[in-house]
Length: 358
Image: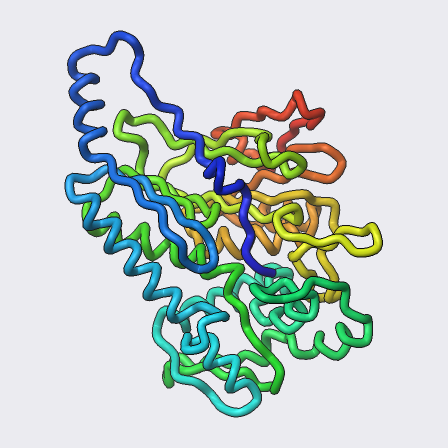
């Protein structure tokens, strides 16, 4: 389970429908001019992905610098590829000793274990050895591993073998060869941290994308909600619907985002830790909408692995997220809460729309 991104960076997956009418009342014109004056945007590259920010603030340029510094700080803690990161050090000491960790790293590890327990390990931060065997890493050569290889690695993905000692501010991987990878949750946690930082500094209107993980602060300056597109998994230049959101995260996982083909068969990067193979439960994508970006990040992967029926069952027993599913058999399915702020746009692509209720 690695990064999960919904929309191509070219489109930014963010459709901000603004523009002034030909004739505005004077008050609205003043608001528009003030908003444009306070508009600040930034694009940066971190955590192996492009990140884009839009905020409205008088001192927005400095605030965006602060946001970027916070992202860099968390990347140095949570990255699996930076050799001096805390996660890299934890992985190096697998089967040897515990490693002292910062509060942020301990929190992300703990949240990862919690989401794993909630989803019957459909979300597994210890899946890294299997992901590497498939070649879904930064420098990996993608290929189908042998069944023998997978069977030998599956015992190394048991999350119970990650021990966290909050009193000692440390964690330990009990088996040599184990490794954690926070790619399925780190950007969600980072979006929460950046949102909190900007809000604390007075930002009341903003939208940003951490590689496609969308987070919103308030509404647009004119009071309209932010509009976020859910990509058509079968066509990167199209979308199946629009979400109107404020003060929440929108995060999507899909097997169409990273994959390879071998002997005429497609294999994607979202691995089922029960089998060691890419999840195959009839879903093309899962979008989670929640005020908790960390949980939304983990759940978008977990529900994709679980499949529609178990995903809906988990939603029915929860009260802190909504979801939109796109299925292999051509359906777009919104939970009833999501349906109140989702507009279906997929009819021209032969999708059928339906909702599920609690």
